[in-house]
Image (cartoon, rainbow, N blue to C red; front, top):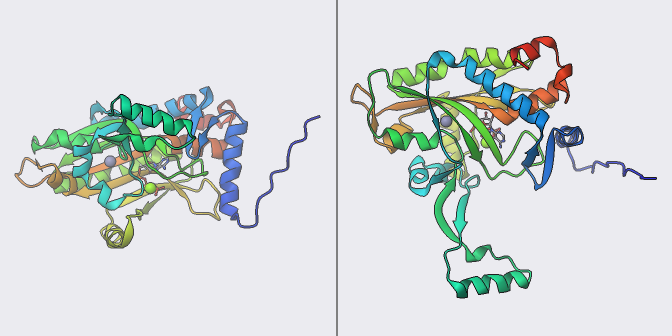
Length: 317
Ligand code: ATP
Ligand code: ZN
Ligand code: MG
């Protein structure tokens, strides 16, 4: 007879941690996600992919009127491009670099000897001048240096995002995907893009049977300087988040999408000018694809065939 150990929740674990652990356990037990041995990294099964694909397709349908130019990038970006985004100044704790082995036979022998002794061998690797992309619109701006056409340009960018924030909250992954709709143009057209998309994104997420609030965002900029940046982000209402109460009304709601005005941050870093000759402004709206998908499993259960008919219709499931 197999005896299942009772899951004991230590006193120090808060109710929120317990709710997160509970959702994570349910997703693993019901075969939605697969634990691959590192917090915030999962294998994904057929049922996950079915819903994830439906979420992405519905997100794209909801923004079809933008007639956006499609661009896809690899999950890593050149260090030089990463550098110009200034990400390392704001979020050094989330950034991650690729390294590789560039030594000779002697170095390789030393690596193997260290490995043989059970020591870590990554110190034998060297920076490869590649960074894991933390936000999928970042590789775009370097392509736009110079003059934009009248009306600016609007892009559909889907890609991998990596952030070093290991967590047992299934809503906080280290590797995930965002589908972004990005506009680069004038101060007015960038703001109009950010504001103009909010209703359709909200409607789309609500059509999935999710309870949605749109709230001003407060990013965790790093360190003391970061506190100033965070305050100005809120004061200037630069970013909004689409949040849903995955863990119930007693816990903070989780962002499953965002609408972000960068002002001239990327325009000035990447020397982009709008048709009026000014430094370009940009804005992006993002669907956090895994978060929307997992929010659906949390809200409606792990069997999509039993979801409400209206939800399945909205997702064309
Ligand atoms: P949070 O405040 O929860 O850390 P964020 O403000 O850092 O989110 P954004 O930078 O706005 O997130 O990224 C766009 C979207 O990507 C978010 O709205 C969310 O849906 C998704 N996202 C961000 N971080 C993660 C993560 N660690 N795991 C899964 N999805 C994420
Ligand atoms: Zn973006
Ligand atoms: Mg974050």
